[in-house]
Image 1 (tube, rainbow, N blue to C red):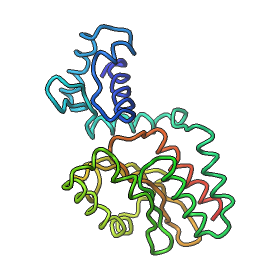
Image 2 (cartoon, rainbow, N blue to C red):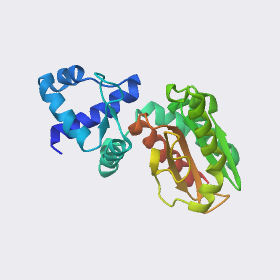
Image 3 (cartoon, one colour):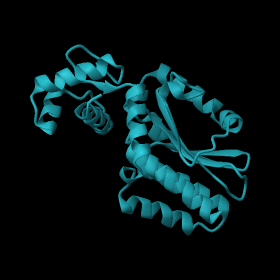
Image 4 (cartoon, helix red, strand yellow):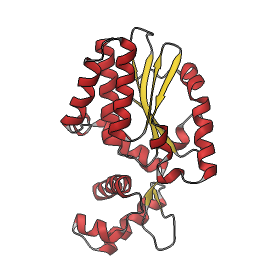
Length: 233
């Protein structure tokens, strides 16, 4: 993959997250200051390798799970690009630090993640799974179809036992679409952080949203939430 193709793929991921509609060659041609034909050629290569797909004839392109994974791996290999707007992280830290009781700190962190990411957010408190933000999750355009809603609901039904069984051990783990051990057809991404706390050596906080999301911001916030809870608890 050429450097320009990498940049085009990243642009498609980020633009699609923002507008929720396929990204066309004309827009990218303006961004990269090359011809539309050049962009279409690069998009053809990316599509042939499985990183993007064309949902409709004569439409733009959207990322595949493979494309999202490539993008997330790029973020993980360069911590300097995994950043967020300071005011967002400051709001998160402030609400966690001034929470008082450990249980309230975790709930405040979850509720703040919901507000800042517009995803569903979750955390373990002892043997319980605390969840907030269902209305945000099911308000996403990906989940207007009733069958898709059922797939997401089945994922949520099995999420708590899966976390207990799999016990992810990283400060940040990202499960994209088909990578999810449960709910592989739900079109969701689980971003989760493991931290040591009062209730367990392996406590978790994270978000669940559509595969189309702002990975840079959400990953940054989830990682920071786990770090702060680990320090405080």
